[in-house]
Image (cartoon, rainbow, N blue to C red; front, side, top):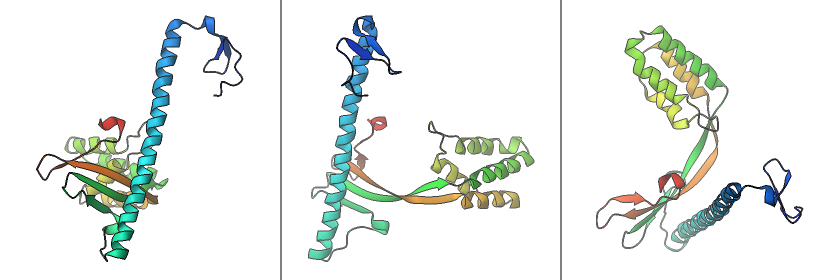
Length: 205
């Protein structure tokens, strides 16, 4: 919200009302200051990460083009994935493309078929499978299914015609919705051949 239309001596609360500054509790002011400072800094970090990704993708693309045109060397593998390292092997940079997978409404039918299979089988023998299914269809905070968890069900090999029908319905519900590109940065651990990722997400640091 813009502060341009807020009179001197007032602040705007979360529902848009103007409140005299002297009526705001000191603790509310303190909380506001901490949240605002962190929010502003988070926006700056997000913008910096966006600039880094844009630069990294451009630099890798330039390297691939120069290698092909000047030296006749083809960098990259399947679907344009590229891995490059520094001369001393300290840093490794990967450009990776991945399909964005979503599920159509057929996922509901697949889930019902899977549940019917489990309910038809003996309870005790399939308790672990029930846990796996419940985990696979657990939505995240945005109400979306976790793709890798759902797809993990396709690796469960059960020789049962109803299960195979359920898995076909699950496969039919998969839809590729564009492609995402990632930049991953790794650093070698000492003189070993082990590389660990440099975390660029809050959850990883």
